[in-house]
Length: 218
Length: 158
Picture 1 (cartoon, chains in turn brown, blue):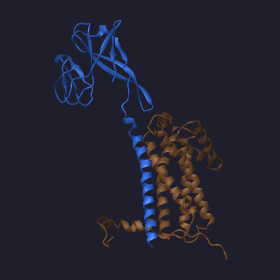
Picture 2 (cartoon, each protein chain N blue to C red; picture 1 turned 120 degrees about the vertical axis):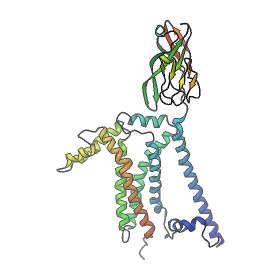
Picture 3 (cartoon, rainbow over the protein chains, first blue to last red; picture 1 turned 45 degrees about the vertical axis):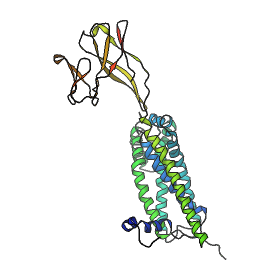
Picture 4 (cartoon, rainbow over the protein chains, first blue to last red; picture 1 turned 90 degrees about the vertical axis):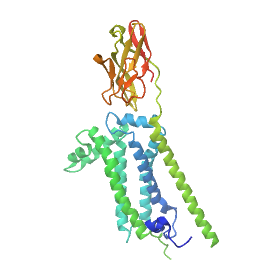
């Protein structure tokens, strides 16, 4: 390799970015340190399969259930795309929580990584909101009643409970209005929040570096 | 030293290979999934009743409307289809599609000019459906017609 940068590198500096991202120094770690990357991988899976699902899915009471059935039974590999999104959703929650536990156990949330930790907590909340809103979208009996129960929980909030319930449902009843607002949250609002938090989270991981596993006291 | 370099190179290549595999694993199903509705739909040939053969005027294309059930995606809806039926002898009948062969607009019969006319781009067809003027590349589609107990039926297999 010559020292002269390549045509592309001279114009973009991609090698420096590549080095910062993938050739950085890391302490000696174990497999538990891959949980964050695993969560990121499943997040990418959710984004790709989610985008694919919107090609056929229609968020209306008349079409939602039938369009999901159409994806599952008729579209080529539709069962695979839907299955990846369905199981990926559960994997996402499990992996995010496991990642969080590792950070807690190793005390990796401490100075100077507090902001990484706070954005991580935000990300977990976003993931849970994804799960809650996505659960309604197939518009089957399980979705309907799970969301009836789930939205009902906020009703016990003192003073504003009634209003919160109507806010979530878009009215007193679970209806097509609920379906479209859950869909809008699921495919626009939450992804925007996810990407913003994720960008900050990962930027800080690269900027600060990951913490070494705590050493045993001697 | 030599060992370390080859280990690094091995890991780089292994990572690249896994990455390529994953990209293909997502990419190929994604393409198949997206492309799947473009598959040609099979429609079984069906004799579609149009109406009484006595309604057909001798030597003049007469418009018949009927409905068929069409399934697109997960929705089945009845759709109106129209045919111009022509006879010269009240024994043999021909049904012409009312869909212009240019870009699919609906043509209509203009009585005083003895021509089919398409309002979109000025396509003109003769009584038999041959192109007389304008951009249409081929004659109007023909359909087989049979008469069963005074009712015309058209062979609508597209």
